Image (cartoon, rainbow, N blue to C red; front, side, top):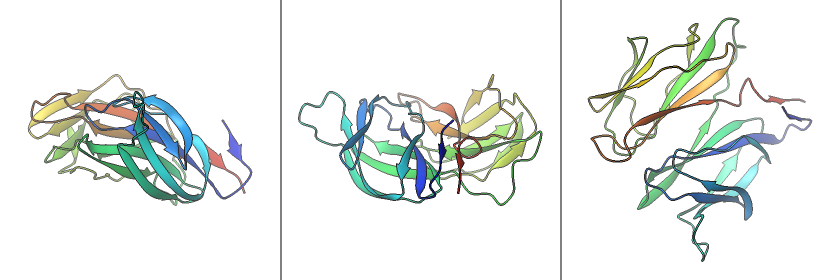
Length: 209
């Protein structure tokens, strides 16, 4: 995996979390970063210099290059970001989800997991792991704290507005960090709720001084 020999860079990936969104091409300061990012799709991490960027998401089949979202963001150095396009197609927005810094190194035999609710019409979300309640009332755009777990193959359950969604069969590597994203519409709207698990950049890519 790539290493930076400079200290003023960051790692960035992109996530399309708008239900019913068309596939989009993503630009930063007019430079194409990724093409055809469909709903619930995400990119690999890429390296960018710490700076202010004009983020633009343009439908991939749009011949006149009209952005559905155009917004400036500042990216801090030595940071890891998932830049998520969120909300509704009629009112898209952006959320920068940084891998949170931690004063302690990952402990042997543990992996770390957190949850982000990106379901735009959900009212609340409760999280259980192996049927043990852990987080209550995770609202839209809210990011939970990290939870250290010793289980390699836990069963994760999200109760979203009274309906239960289960994620199982996921194998977590020890001493790695993960985020589970709650995507889609609740209340029986389409596309419905899905749980997407992504490994974070922190603990996976290293900045060198």
